[in-house]
Length: 301
Ligand SMILES: Nc1ncnc2c1ncn2[C@@H]1O[C@H](COP(=O)(O)OP(=O)(O)O)[C@@H](O)[C@H]1O
Ligand SMILES: [Mg+2]
Image 1 (cartoon, protein in one colour):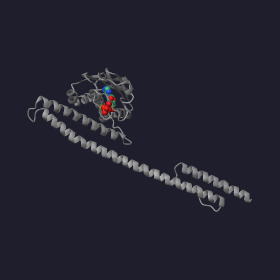
Image 2 (cartoon, rainbow, N blue to C red):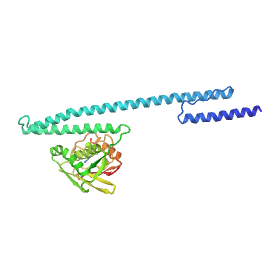
Image 3 (cartoon, rainbow, N blue to C red):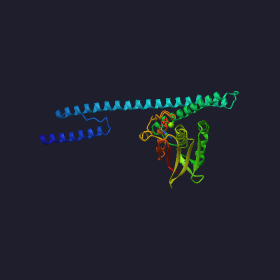
Image 4 (tube, rainbow, N blue to C red):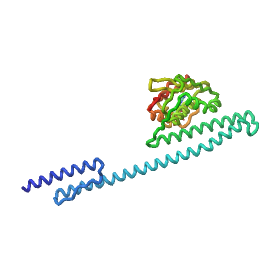
């Protein structure tokens, strides 16, 4: 009789202990075993409860650390976003001042002065796009970023981007040619702000790396019935075979002596934005012949 009772108590305890261990294992970190008068079981109950206690302490510590880290991340991102935004204001003011000089609103300027001011204007615009790219990258790296799609008429969308860049490509002595092979009026649901940044970055890269060649060709064309392609082609320096696989990496910036580079966030951002849209970005390139970057996107989400 006593033996049966003992076995029952032991089985019951084993069952309870098993449940408690599983419960703690699956996250219920406050689960504990009831104390008992049975001497053997009392000891094991104590050991298990101590073990659960230390798991609880560690789990709490980990949770607190994660929380602190997330707060720091948000603070850092907020700080960067505010900083980059504030940096843009004086850059734009300077750009306007350069324009006033170049349009002779402050009086005549000598050819040498004109040349210098044009160069300052170019670096200033580079700086503005760099700040934009930094801002966008920080935004996109915040958790749960959502893209905001609106319906965009593709032909005018690309034309507008090109015309907004006219001052910079003409200062560099480049032509940007646009060919639309889609039916006019074709439209797509895109985050127009972010895709604009992608196309801008590709054109700015083409300008920076096109060497002595003048032309940059932008083409809008059909891919399949659900998707289309935007390509940006230059006939400049091209990209070394060993370099191609690295160019979409964060902070990767090539080291050619003949072209200007930034901090290596442009293509990283392009790739992120295009992927958020469910699309893809590809490059075909040949050294000293040029590069063609092609973005494929769906018309609808
Ligand atoms: N059109 C291009 N022709 C040649 N090389 C390019 C072109 N676009 C990008 N690259 C290479 O890819 C690198 C990464 O580009 P990107 O991410 O825009 O960074 P960044 O322009 O700041 O260097 C560039 O430094 C350059 O070496
Ligand atoms: Mg770039």
